[in-house]
Image (tube, rainbow, N blue to C red):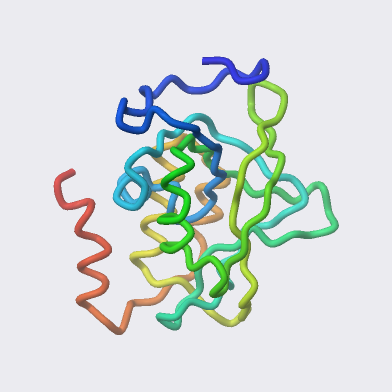
Length: 187
């Protein structure tokens, strides 16, 4: 599939019930996990790995559960990059994604131009943190979502290792941990 001269992964068409306007969403955190994102947004289809320049991946977004979540932190350094996945999804699913991401409650959205390996760029929507605490760490289950998505979508090994090196903590709520990990039990 081509989009403005960019070759996108052909990972299936959006099902007929979603035969409506679509949009591109750039995910760099837990939503890179295909199982996690599809549980939230059934129409989502991974299209390609992409790079957001002038940003840095940080786990400092203050979550309501007391842990750190991912942020594509904007820097003034074009050499800093966040690598993630471009998903195509039905525009009608965007309000549900906004709700799950906490739009207006610690995350805001912006349109970004991401570079793709085939050359060129894709315009996509992404979220960025507005509630930040650099002392926070992610829970093990959250880091697992991020790592799973990074690996299954083929992010570069060095980048996956950087994510793996992030210190994470046990969730003090074991039921939440089990609930979050349940989507992987049939693997």
